Length: 305
Image (cartoon, rainbow, N blue to C red; front, side, top):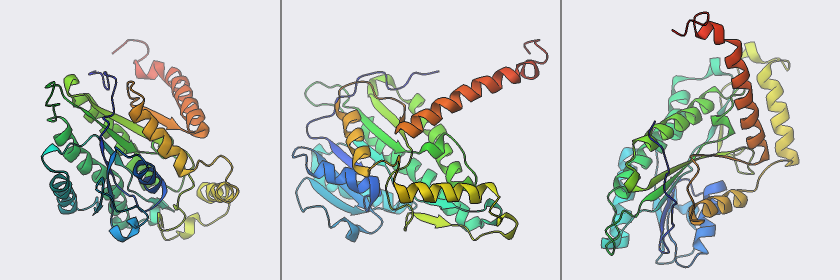
């Protein structure tokens, strides 16, 4: 397979960052961090730009409306960014952070709920990423003629690695982002130096229990407290209330900036937080054990078909 992220990535002093979903959570924390960096330039976006008033007015900061579910909105945001920064416009880091969680009994999910979740998590990420790649792969340093490259952070989740009851369409969106990103990363020409990082945080203290979380109407067949989804809801709610093992959004923001600025090769996948790392490792080990169990079946009795 074509290798990915083969060159160390160097963050330019005047890097331009574009972040989706800056109204709260990880997006807001990262935008706040970048606003404190005098030479970094920021394109902060949200469906409602009035939620971006926490950012100062500054020539290096552009606040834009961007609804990732709307191709026209994505096009307009890229056009506005190019117009704002002029002839030297380049796009160095894109953070696809916009999204929300859809939880509940999958049998009761409506077509509209399912489509909207996938449209936001997956198709929104895909359309912003490909617009960004179109800019990054053509961008050369005028002094050297070498490609400047770029970095795309696609915010997935532990939910893109492991599936739990009661979140089927959220998992579908995050699993799709993971496979799609890996495929696109392998399409890149090495000299372009366009890098991808799939970020897989576990619990983060965001507003997912507020407007960042949508719920499917309960289905009576799954209402019992003994049902797996109900048990998981209980444990999740206990964890959110206690805050144990939950990361602060600022910690995630600091790590993203560290990955971009450390001058090393970018990891394709980054399980973020001890819980995510441990569960990723456990899943990989379990997968290897399961492979051994089905080896005879997979190879048609060892015939190696």
